[in-house]
Image (spheres, rainbow, N blue to C red):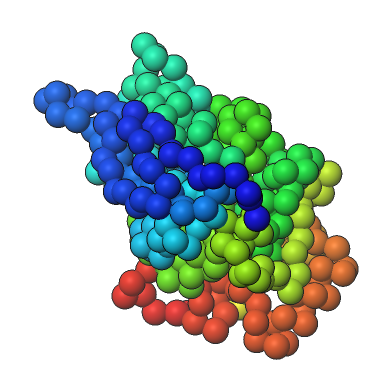
Length: 357
């Protein structure tokens, strides 16, 4: 527990200890000269401690994290916290309004524009405001993403596990799978970590929808982090039954279509696949030609194509090799009915109104 006095959180304004404030912070203007404002919640605890940021909507059509932040911001009050929680609910407001990944018109990727700078293009100006006013004031952070449209991704974190401070954060969050890597140097995660603010990315499901099982898991992960860093005192940290770090020295591979046609996924009911197992079949419209894509090794499917059509070169799945020990741990969870599979127990990553396969 910190023995120092709590301090205000300062951006352009100030949020005093013991205060919870919802603000709309201007980071740009529309063609009409109207302000572009991001919604931010700052919960400044009544006791001193770390400042933790949560970000979502850096890609405008990735919505699971937006729901996570809404509920996390509502869940905690200043009296709960030894420290400060800074929630940037939707970072890429123009993309969010257009429901597309990048900033509209010029298709600028905000997550390749940090830390940004004044007098630069639209994305870099926005990134500069976000980073300078909010993120740079924090001690650690979690950036929420989903897969891009037409794909889904397994619930996992991405983190630079060679950095001990990041390693602690990733392990505290508690996802089963961690993809090790330092990330793009101009991504939010890459820049913050390089500046001494350990940050992880959480990838969860698919774009354009809320997926309740994943949102609940992410909220539990946020709680784990706050507990591990004593922002929440006397709260136990829930550890996963197994956790696998997939490093740069371990094989991860995108498998791509070599022919155009209709894609039928064959794998399941979990993302665990054996070497030689059929992952999908691509057929022509006359059903006269079929091309089967098989698993090149035993592993887990970290991401898969959901659009049932493909062109030559389209990625159909992202597979990561696992060792025998991890395979055995996953088998045990499958036998107990606990494994977080895409198509298992009705927990396929689905949106409202969809039925489980």
